[in-house]
Image 1 (cartoon, rainbow, N blue to C red):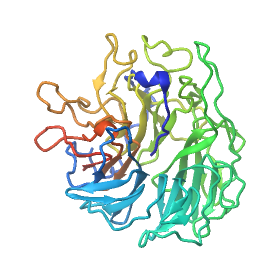
Image 2: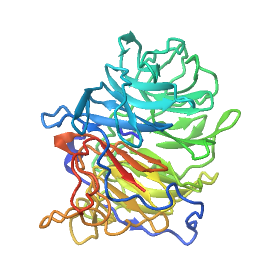
Image 3: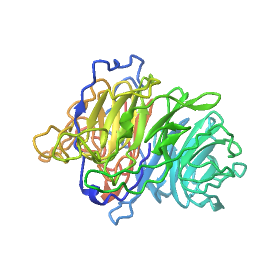
Image 4: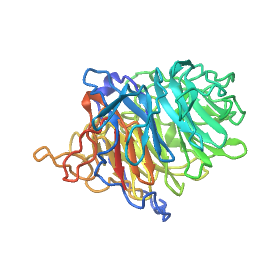
Length: 475
């Protein structure tokens, strides 16, 4: 999962207050299907993973934006210039790969000259599809999209490689490369924002015909107008069985159906809009963050959709006053039934206290969320003010899928002893852009803002440092 980098002005100094709203009596019971790994992940971070080699102290922040695994190899993309593992530092511009078990950095070096937002791999792991904002890959001229050999790092010329605008997200479904972004055309197709490309030729294969349009225009309680938010598909998440896809972004109409912030596709012989939706997604958050639902994940049995949001606070109504209880879905994690109804209501909401979440992943035992939040279980007021409850949870947290409450005691560091409090924690930085669960554990992609480098704990219970941009918590 990825997040949109936004200059927040007023909201930059404000954070979210959130606490869990307990599920209704109709909430589904936790799945009995075995989870990936069968337990929550360990709080002890692996020490063998690569990391960003630069500090970010001078303001030149680098960031891993997405991770994916193919076979025994991890692929990471984003905005960075060098990668370090133990005593070895290598130059890698915006894309690299490494062994999923040892962390050893491979020789693969596509040398992309701009930010890579998303990566998808062919089933045989021979081809990496890259999307972002770039113009060359290994000195070959391309425009925002390319297919690259995972052996040589060279552009595969048979795959067309020109998008008229930023590519945000890639997801491979069979022979269909589902491609979302801010583009107004791609590889000869005039379709905007979301298109299916043939995975061999890169040409529009006609699988998606959604006519996505609209953006968020509103006035909040203080009279401020909603800020800039261009129509786009920003993020996607395939279901565990590959039969459905969640798409997040800026739109008001998808396939002639009213949709805001998120929609679900059924990926059959043709791609169709699933009836699944909630009127709660129609809510407006603060004017500086009109697009607020940037990440979603599935429960392993696909019965539940979890969302992780930004937004600061509601634009109107309950929660607008930062001194009062939170309301709506702004700056929160939430769970929704995944059934084919357009009137779904949340099972629970867990508020951060007005800090943003950017990523989520789930197994049967926890809903993992990441961002630059300070707290979870914080439903009263913003910034932890007043007498409202809140639990330290900097940078990431694990939420009980049934109750919607933080697992154990949350996160944090005891200022007197330096010991970690609770189970999970990471340096907040700009925020965790992506979370990926594999059979081995949880991978977290983040940044190096102001040398942010802690994640989880050591075997001795101390904060684990040296994890700039990349952290792995094993099962």
